[in-house]
Length: 149
Image (tube, rainbow, N blue to C red; front, side, top):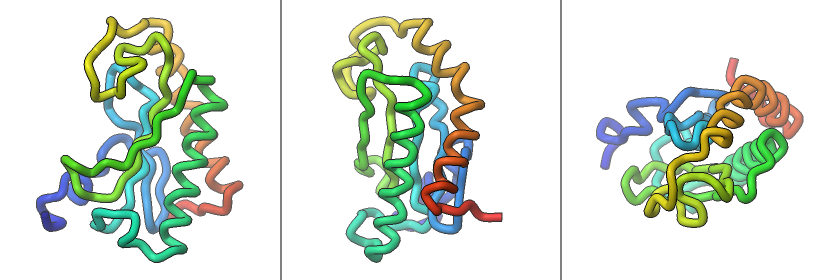
């Protein structure tokens, strides 16, 4: 797959919450998991091992900061981190807050639905999104990850 065919090269992959010269953090448009974040490497590489050590460290720091912000904002039962790329072989990490009452728990969000989504869980995530964006930017700045101008 070349850059012109890659979905994450052609589009942002969601609502951009933060970005710097090397990566972006987006809110994934998923109505059942409103606070689903994706950390996407800007250039088209398929694997972590394609990155220089300092770039891999930068990417992982962004993933960890995103996880911490979600944990603080939402107090989920679990955070799922995944770097798959089977469908889109462009380096990206999924950072997904999970709740015991979400539609798929304890399965992955791509697994078999276990129940209807809990309206209270969805409402809490939707309500948290504006503050989450500000908290994410502040936490990334504190971690010395600076956004692009």
